[in-house]
Length: 486
Ligand SMILES: Nc1ncnc2c1ncn2[C@@H]1O[C@H](COP(=O)(O)OP(=O)(O)O)[C@@H](O)[C@H]1O
Ligand SMILES: [Mg+2]
Image 1: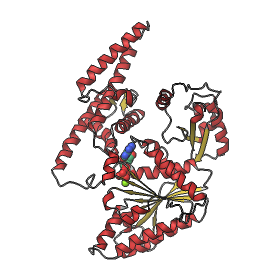
Image 2: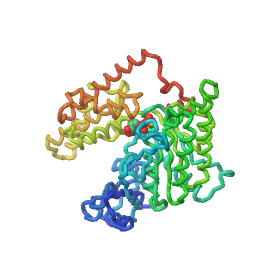
Image 3: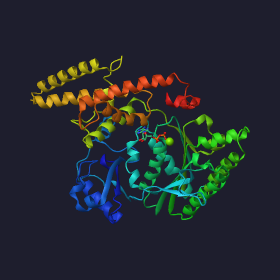
Image 4: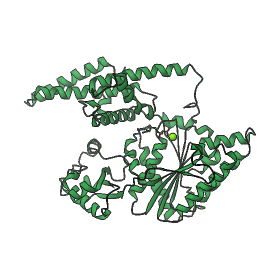
């Protein structure tokens, strides 16, 4: 197989576009044939420029977006595999989907006054949704969690559509993500349901994401909760009756269901709680009969999970706090976004993680180590260039040295944020901007320094928190979760 034949294109059409998916796919194939692998200049084709909202390349079978860095890494692993010249490659696989811009709608049950926010029974989003476009790509993990989830979902749907007897081969189509708060579990579930629809646009005529917040099932109309569960699932089954429509049901923070049942079984709460949880479990079981449903559940505290629920999950995946590589990538993506929005100026493209991390001294990175490494790198490059008689303009030399130094500073931040969740990392740029004065566009170097002091601030604040009784986060992770994390 040739190098570029491994690339797949995922094309999202603008909600306003009436273009035919097949026609778009043909044009993408034609444009890809005359473009460098993994890049597509949409402005070269007026029809594509008008219709396409987003175009993303992926290595075939992979779940990560294609990038020149990934391709370079692949070439390093297989040195013989050169990139074929444009025009000589087999066509890429193209997935075209229309994006919906309906927004999420809240659904209320009869007799529960739509004016009261507690009466929101579930949220419904038409898939693939414009609001979820790019979410999958924005979630960054150390190991290939996303690949695992996408593969599972495809296999589960394939088993269902092939009519595999679930009495003989268990397949509940229930996926459970668990781990500390802020690690991207809810976002991953939403993004996965969007991704499935984007990739299977031909298999389904419509897709819906139904989100039910387990908290809302225990509303102040506690005795009404059983009815609420019934209403939600009646709606889900209505959608599922059309075999061409796909439904992802997200049961977020499922531990609150489990905790209620445990409390009720201990006799400290009315037995209604048991009835509600049992109703949910029975309803979830009844969904097995449909080939076009996937149930996604999240939990922040695995220890409190109802055994009956956990047992129903085909796959249970621990989503841990991001390690150094993921932290670096998350921070790099924040910096790139601020550069795009012109909130930070003179941003240099962050360097590749692996070569940078190989340079980190045993004691870790600090500002003086960064100075030393930048000077070393500068003179090594200069010597190599001199040996090749390669004249480099001083400005270009300076720019390269700055890019290297700033990438190391970003790496230092990734090192300093050990134990932070993805949510806290994505908040850091805002705090840094505020710390640096909060007005107008900032230059890259002072911005990175402001990020550093915002990290120190937050750590000092966290130390104060630790004086208080410990929170549940992390404390109740099961032994296997801790091992996975380590
Ligand atoms: N690994 C990650 N990569 C990128 N962003 C992340 C990651 N983990 C969390 N985030 C960001 O943090 C925010 C909160 O994530 P969320 O899905 O609500 O976490 P959880 O459900 O685990 O509490 C989201 O905006 C998400 O983009
Ligand atoms: Mg969540």
